[in-house]
Length: 137
Image 1 (cartoon, rainbow, N blue to C red):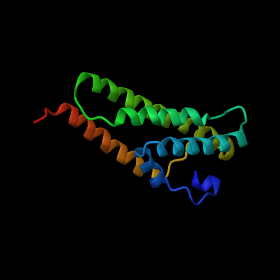
Image 2 (image 1 turned 60 degrees about the vertical axis):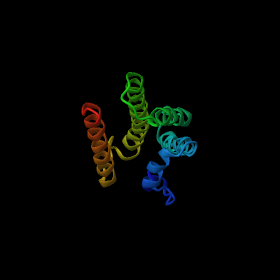
Image 3 (image 1 turned 90 degrees about the vertical axis):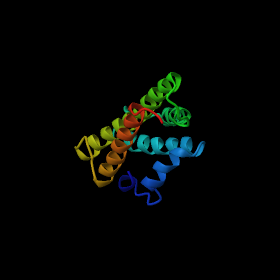
């Protein structure tokens, strides 16, 4: 997105790390989804991305992310966390895909940064699943 907007102040790693700061995470998510909406609305005004929905999804994710327990209630919250996080990513990605399809004729745009992000996410998933399946000491 930084390349598409020409905004050199967009720092993907900084944006990703901001998710862990309450309040700031919602602001950054809102800004991120607003940028996607501006891109999409330039090429197809019928397709819009609601920045507030993205920010709310991040807040829900953060609220459920801040606990660590294997109690059944917290396992349900983990499911909510994963669902909220996945919904936010899918919602934003669908907007970006619509933009890339209309602006560049390609529905997907996958680069080295995306591969790094997916690798980190996969490692986190494996560590989380192993942690749930491994009996505590």
